[in-house]
Image (cartoon, rainbow, N blue to C red; front, top):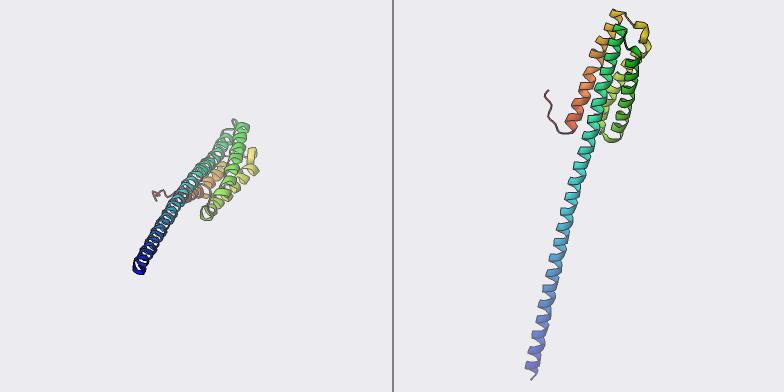
Length: 181
């Protein structure tokens, strides 16, 4: 009789132990599945953040590149207006507008662009502002003085355009776009 009762207790004990192991294994599997799902969610969120960051930088770079090029073009147009002595005030107003647009785009880039890109953009900004200062200083007093106007235009092509191009190259590189250079 003791053997019969002992066997029943032993069987019950083993059944309880087996059930406990099964429950532990199931809990461990659920924990692993939760961890895996969490890891997948975090990876997906990181990809979304990366795509959003790339899109934000792309938009910012387009605005800055456009504003820079329009700023240089407005300076060139101002020189042509001075050379022809026609629509000088309208060209100057357009130059001021382009300068303001550039300043706004550059301010946005300061908050978004990584330091390596911002360093190149800063050099371009300095060159643009230096040229703008020379144009403003010379102003209408150069109207009709062909040699002086040509010097300013040459300086624009030599001292500004290459740095605007370098800025564009740095932005393209940051976006992962291969350069033609």
